[in-house]
Amino acid sequence: MIDLLAFMTIILWPVILLFWIPLHLFTGFFRSLGKFTYLMPLITWLPLAFLLYQNRDFLLQYKVDLPLTVNMAGAVLLLSGTLIHLWTAKLLGIWGLVGLPEVYTRQEGRLVSGGAFSVVRHPTYLAHTVMFTGIFMITGVVTVGVITVIDLLVVLLLIIPMEDKELTDRFGEGYRLYRSRVPAILPSFRRLLGSGSIIPGRIEIFALDHTTPLPELLEELQRETHDKMENPQMLTGRVAGRLLQMLVRISGAKRVVEIGTFTGFSALMMADGLPDDGELITCEISPELAEFARRYFDRSPHRDKIRLRVGPAINALRGMPNRCADFVFIDADKTSYINYYEEGMRILKSGGLITVDNVLWSGRVLNPRDEDSRAIAEFNRRVMEDSRAEKVMLTVRDGLYLIRKKEQTDA
Image (cartoon, rainbow, N blue to C red; front, side, top):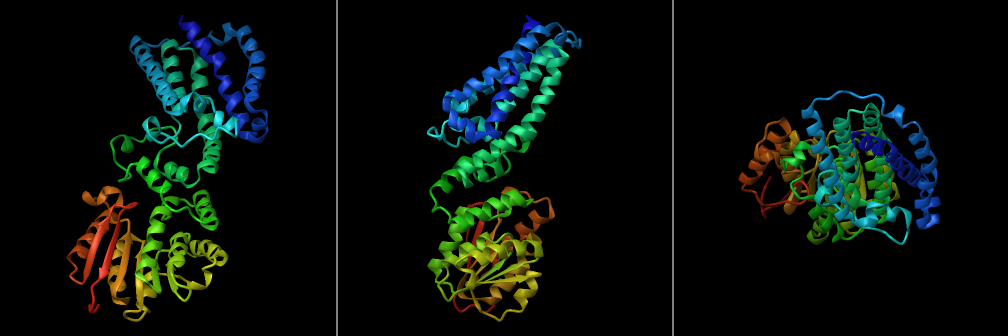
């Protein structure tokens, strides 16, 4: 019975590789075959299965003698992996589980982010790893152990990157947001304990789906940011970006100052909210990021409104006259937030708005232990005590502080 369990694992495992790898490498070809795609791995697997069967004695020959406690732990893992598979099947439906949306263009599928998918993006592959590990611990068959390691490496290095690209193409910003929040296959203990994003991923995606879509230029900017930047989560995103754009538009601002350009997304959103004779000054300390953003500014219909300053933002701010701006957006180095705020209040006209990002800092402001967390907590305290301003803190994205300079305030 033990040998049968090990051999069934050995003989069935190649189906994963023979189906998913060609499907993602040659998606167009397989979609042209439609449901006949499922015959392709069967045709290639049958002779391989016969070869494995012929050599079954050799494949089962080498074993590790494992204690009973390890065997029992393996049984628990095998059961756990099976339950994860069943859970995933219930969430995706049978057609989603067997990859019909990838095979058949008329079956588009949907982005599932709840249940097992709220812990890892690819719970099916996690289930494989857990099951194979369990079977090795039960049987001690070395070939099964080797398969477990190879399967994990192939999934991590080949299949998941291909699936992530295909899902990003299909679901766009929704999947990019989901991908930035949820690990691929190895669960995050911080996530399991409930730390990380302050807003549940499913709620974020729901809010995204109910926010005006982006123009193609900004979609392209988002894609390139996620593909090329080390910290793509720093990009403001559609929901916060549309909020900034709306605040600029409804406030009637004509001059906006942004501290922290990054790749230019928020600057382009706010520039769209300005009138034709409006001006946006955006400050970025990194020449590389400034050049990245400039490429998109030059292609935007709002390019004539944007002035890009490269260098320390505090120097640019100190060179600006009092009460020259209607709107200030702060999203840069956290330890300098107080300095940016004070200069922002000085250059802001009475009745103008300052908007500050990351003021909740993934909840770490509640128990600040590192330098950035302490700096943001202190900034929040200073703003709250500032009698020159009316303020409201929003739980949008990572926390947005809206601060209105009171009328007739000298600063």
